[in-house]
Image 1 (cartoon, helix red, strand yellow):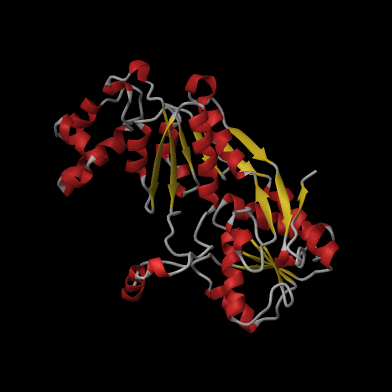
Image 2: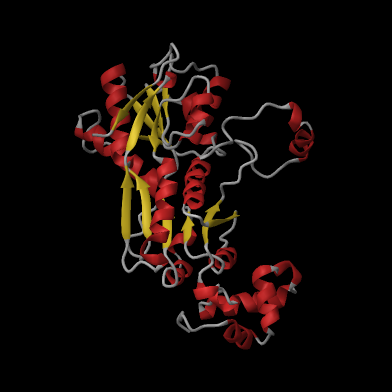
Length: 373
């Protein structure tokens, strides 16, 4: 059955052969519903395309006065953490005696969220935050029923039928993905210009020519950055037209391939990292291997998170307009009286190159910036 604005909680209850109370509990308190029943209700919700409606709960004009911001896989307790081992659980007990690992917070998402919160407050709107390490469709649907507009961080979910259904009911903003096939507003930074700034600086200011890109191409941002890293080197003659450039696939929590590359292959002149969080992990690994930055190899990041300024050496990076990205998301959700978008939109914000110690600049503590022309 196709998604329809007329689908109600009664339709779901009838299709799943349960009461409307059970449907409500499944949405808001799934832990109180037996698993088989919950699965049946969730299947009906997905099949019918039902989205809980604020107006169905009797709110005036169907407006909640709230906006939603949802993220996936960005809750990190340890910079290189995964599932807790027994030893790690013991470490938690001593957490008060340990210094904060600057790689863990704040992240790119945190800084966009700050801008989103500030603009929501400025606009007099309540903010509902949601997160999940899973696909989270039911959780997103639940939040969508309590807000007038929803912003999402990148995840495979963003391409799903659920997003297409939601975008028919309310304005949707997606960060860091250019979803030009759906009626949503995509907000991205000028990744290509940022990568050109990095390469120009490494080549022209420091004479570095052998570069290696570190990152996994699992997002629009990282893919765009790598493609420009490759194309621009070919354009300026740094590598041949048919060369692919050096790529080391890694994530902040999966650095084995990076360590293997460093210990078995010749060091490049610079590691160009796809994100700041990854660059901070690179700095940590290099330090552990006795490799000096920037003396032996330069390191650059991309994002401009605060943690980069706390690192040693301080991280040269491309700073995104993260607070402005958050504020713009709120403005787009509230535009046109909160009505759904009729066509895709792409908003690209400018970036700045922040020159610090990890590339060989600012070794006396200074910091310089270069803005995209």
